[in-house]
Amino acid sequence: VDADRVDAFCETHEIPAKYTDVGQMLEKEQPNLVHICTPPGTHCDLIVAALEAGAWVYCEKPLCASLAEMDRIEEAELRTGNYCSSVFQWRFGSGGQHLKSLIDTGALGNPLVGNCLTVWYRTPAYYAVPWRGKWATELGGCTMGHGIHAMDFFLWLFGEWREVRAMMGTLERDIEVEDVSMAMVRFANGAMGNITNSVLSPREESYLRMDFQKATVELTHLYSYNNDDWRYSIHPGMTHSDELAQWQDLPANLASSHIGQLAEILDCMGRNERPSVSGAGVRGTIEFLASLYKSAITGQPVLRGSIAKDDPFYHHMNGTGDQSWQNPT
Image 1 (cartoon, rainbow, N blue to C red):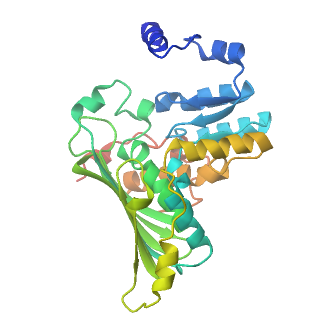
Image 2 (image 1 turned 120 degrees about the vertical axis):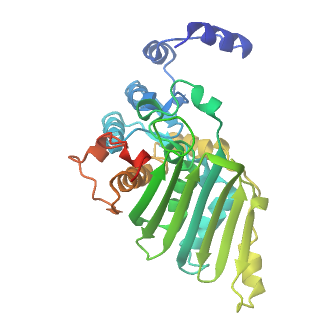
Image 3 (image 1 turned 180 degrees about the horizontal axis):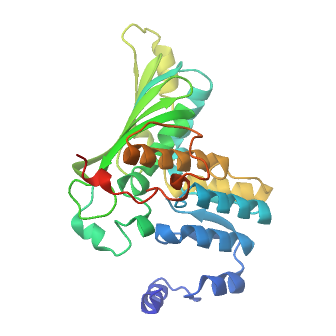
């Protein structure tokens, strides 16, 4: 920790107490809730320390480096009775909550085909920050650090995933990790989807298209969506415009910011109940990430539940550290 930067930050924002040691901070302040916004490689140790100090945790993505670290977090939750939520705020926007309700009640019919794109642009200067672009400290590339929000949201909406087949590459940036990844996903309900993540795309966009039996639902935005960013379309033979009107009747606008998720966390704290984006509610996304990386690195499809504790991809997103995927023959 840079003590001079801590001093300057606290002075600018009129923060009376300042610390360069998290243990001292936890002991002195005894916080109820800790928001962890540090580089990804530090997350797991800080989460466990905060839980053991008696605090709940709200941790920025990516939550942790591996399924093994997810185990550590869940064990600390069980040991302490406190909970850790991963920042997946897209689940809490009014548009997302509305669509989730329509899906769960069967109003749109079965999910069939999905497309999930996170196509952003990050300059070489972005990766000049020392912890970025490295497996040990950023934990992955555009998949882990950028596309993770859209992928989590897509998986949450479309249902439990079953199989992933992926490719990735480092096409432009001078980094250890990927700057492009693509995946095909098969879901337990039979639906299929494809995912694209990129930090090389000059026209930036986050785009989800989900085709159901009765309708196509699209979301186009960049970092945070509002109600106006959603589009519902009926299939050509459908004449029930009243149904379409009901689907498009979204509740009062709540952007997909941290506010909605924080409200849930505080409510759960008051009732001492597990927040939805913790434990099993986030483990499926961590497992999906590990499976995507394993498929991309090994060139083989990966089934859900197949990465066991003796698998190197259980402990590291890049498995054994093989980098041959960067220069495929």
